[in-house]
Image (cartoon, rainbow, N blue to C red):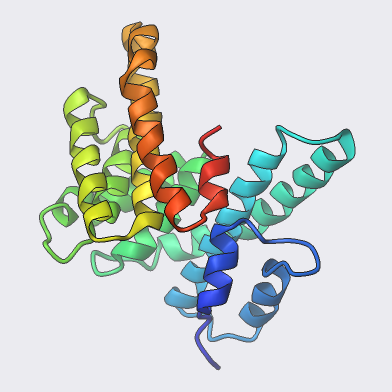
Amino acid sequence: MSLLDLSREEKEAIWKGEYWGEDGVLIPIRNRFTGCDQSIESKKNMLSVEYSAANRAWSDLRKGSVRQRFKALWRLYDSARRAMPLARSLSSRLNINNHDEIDVVVTVLIQFRQRELAQKLLDSIPWYELLRRDYIAPHTKAFLIRHAINCGLAYLSNERIAQIEAYARHTEQRLDYRQAARVWRTARDLLIVLARREGKLAMYKHKKLPELERNARRCAQKIGAMDQIAKLR
């Protein structure tokens, strides 16, 4: 049995949000997954696709007609119910060498309110050890910090956000605009949480938040990542 690997065209379609419809890639990828080797890598790839599709469906819930919103709701449910068993299965099989898989699995667990399981996985690595490894991509380090904050393992502060911004700049310098867009958006989203907690949202809205959003939008537009642009709304 073969590994579930995505083609360049499929990856491009996913970043553009082309999951459903006549030219959608979600159904063909699901069909291939049923006949693949069910390895950690294959399950991680399928989980990443389902989670990305669920996020796009969530964005679609906020726009369009009632019929379109009901369709988005079904798509969200369909991908979510497929993603959770994959995440649970992977969470017990990962170690410090599976850093890319850890990011995907923890993201899904947190999103679907499985914080204790996500916290246990981050603690078992441990997550802060990965930040010291030079071979770990800067975007992965940024997401590990976000996960640790969301699980209560790290404190949300301006210093942590500045650290994520540094990883965003590093990612952009490597010309990885897809991931750079995600990291800039992560910095923006965490700053919103911090600003609300400190009662400073109005102050940040004038300069810092628009700056972070512009950075994310600029990177997404460079590679036509419409899915990332949609998440900035």
